[in-house]
Length: 437
Image 1 (cartoon, rainbow, N blue to C red):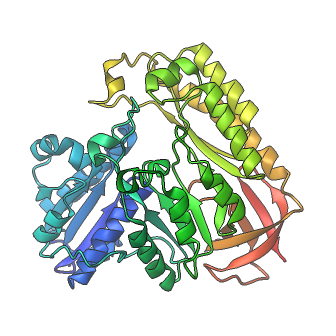
Image 2 (image 1 turned 90 degrees about the vertical axis):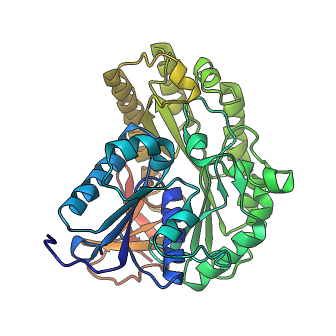
Image 3 (image 1 turned 60 degrees about the vertical axis):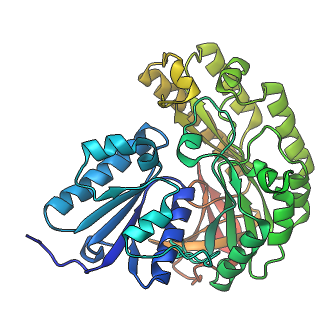
């Protein structure tokens, strides 16, 4: 018996995981909308509709558990008559479909990462190939993710992404420019380029790395003012990209380059195709070619066989490199990866201790770097108003993961999505306080 009234034939899409999943949900919703379907994204309970599509993440243990909990939540709502249909798609479904079908049978159907046409058909919609670049964006209207490639060809031992997303497949430059133009027409000012590996872009389509050519095409799109690069692999890094970052005002002085580790024995076991010496040389070249560049990285703590000596190498290196932005994951032992054949021999509490030690060093570095910004002026993009502050970002900060600039709102009005120039008056560990000039 239905305990509340749901919107009939209304589809609510729930997204879990990374920005690539957000992009996929936006494309799915764009297709549904073009088919005349009523669709919402993570609607409030009283407005969520009677059909739910859950786009899952299957990357590491915590993400998998969140996805499973969400599926169980909506399966329970279906049993209680609060929703009529529940569908599951995305990485977890791609990787564990038989297990999920057996363990959670109340879900109407499970779909993999490449099953969008089939999912649409099940929802009574047709996949429209002509909708290149059409999406129902879920981010604030002034920035959007632009996924330039799908999948990955890298052999990293710890990563299950190729199992869930397949091999690397680049999107043609002309299609990406069309998509960027459509986003700009809707008011998007910042494009955040995403892929599992941006540096590999173009090798499959053009037989050469073409990230630089793509950037040169995107900077010509009228209305786009910032272009940000996420997830560049260190091995085979296309050096022409650094020249473009330095020379093109629209390309942010910002690189997200997940380095994962720096101790040579661990890098070798991880199958990263690089060494500490090569990584240090790459970082030095980035800073030389693009003075003032902000480098974000992520690390893994507690990889199989990681010794205290290896961990100390990481700590010393983090102190030495003084990354502008840094995050750390505790190693997750993933089935069917190369590293799963190794003994997961670092206890969970030791993994967490190592995470905490790295982040304690990084917090001090972040505060020191922020203190150097006091008294300086920056161009800031305003994302939202929160409490007594407008909250914005410099070109050196990506949404959700990086530092923010807080502008007191009592005597000033700022429009969300506008740029303004501010002067930093106070620094904290991860945020800045500023006044508008």
